[in-house]
Image 1 (tube, rainbow, N blue to C red):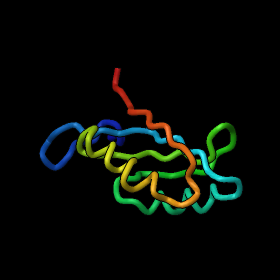
Image 2 (cartoon, rainbow, N blue to C red):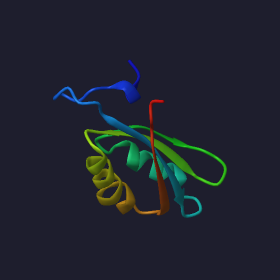
Image 3 (cartoon, rainbow, N blue to C red):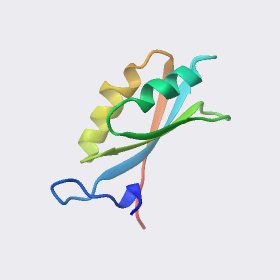
Image 4 (cartoon, rainbow, N blue to C red):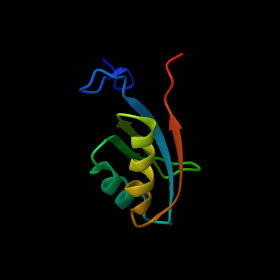
Length: 90
């Protein structure tokens, strides 16, 4: 089963999202490593283009996802901006 189709322990559909991260110059590798260690982050990769790191996160609810991004991801030193893109199943 894919991460987007995962269920929580309570049997609810989990919320998954991609978080696009811009970093200070030269900080992408360290940011990817730091965010990858956060509970709820499924993967974190350095990329090229307008964003420097893309992570995939999973949480029990949209509120939990928001808390993960605001109170954990955005506090990592070197991050200048994030864009959260929740995954939808159409």
